[in-house]
Length: 170
Length: 190
Image (cartoon, rainbow over all chains, first blue to last red; front, side, top):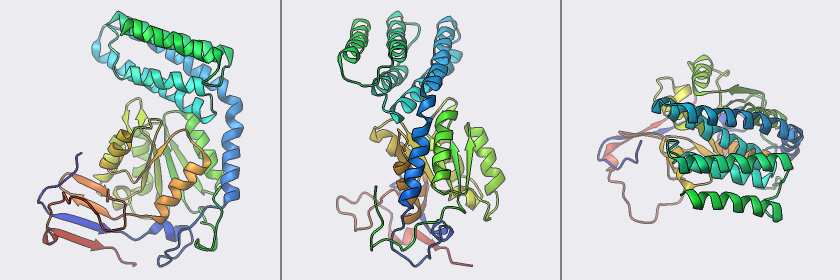
C-alpha cells in the first residue's frame, strides 16, 4: 500500500474517542491522561520476574533453531526452504527479543545479526551456510558461558570470530 | 517514571474496561506483555499466537459494535506465516467498523525507520520498538487514547492520518487533492 497523492476523492472520518470514554474521561476534556505510575512499576516487576525463565526459553528456541537449520540443509524444494528460512529468521528474532528484554546484550547482538543475515541467505551457497553455522556456534557459546554484556574480552572474541567468518565467506 | 502534574487529568485512566489483544508467535513475549498489561490494570487481555487466530478473535469480539469489543491490538511485526501488516491491512479493509477503525500498535525488534514507515503505510495507529518494557507499553496505550487521529480513506490507503503534527504543515505540499474532493464525516454521540 503506497502513499496516495492522487486527484481522487478523499474521505476523512472523525471518530468519537471511545477509548477516552472507556478510560473514564470525558470527550471534551483535552488534558492528557496518565496511567497510575504504581501500576506501571508493578507491570515492570511482572516483566522482571520472568527473567528466571530466560535460559529455559532461549534453550528451547536454540533446539528449534538447530533443528530447522538441519532441515534447511537437507531440503531440496526451494519453496519449502524459503518457508524454513522464514522460521529461522523468526527464531533469531525471538532470541533477540527475549535477550534484549533482559539486557543479555551479546545474545541480542548475535540474534540481530542472524536476523539480518536470514533476510539474504541462499542456503545452496556453501559460504552462506558457513556464516549461518558461525552464528549458531557463537550463539551456542554465549548461551553455555552465560555471557551477558556486549563488551569485555570474551564478548569481543566471539564477535571477532563471527566477523571473521562473515568476511571470509562473503 | 513520569509523574502526574497539574496539566494532566486529575485521576489516572481506568483501564479495567479495556480489552487488549496481543498477537505474537512467541508465547513467552506474549505472556510477558499480557501479565504486564494486567498489572497495569487492563481488564481483559487476549493472546493470539498467529494471524489466523487473531482474525478469528476479531470476528468473534468485533463483528458488531459492543462494549465487548477488543479495544486495541498489539501486533508483532515479524511472524512465521507473514508480517503484522497482513493483519492490519485485513482489518482496515473489513466491513465492520469495530474492526476497521480499531487502534493497532505494531511491535518490532527492528529499530529501523523502515518498519515504522511500513507500519504507518499499512494503516497501523502506532509502532513500538522492542524490547518490551512496562513504560513503553504504557506510553503507547496512552498515546492511542490521548491522540486519536482521523481516519483517511483514499484510493490506495485506509488508516489513521499519517501526518501527526497538529500544527500547520510547513514544507513542500505534495498533496494534490482539492478541498472540494474531500468529504468529511463527523461521528456524533448517539
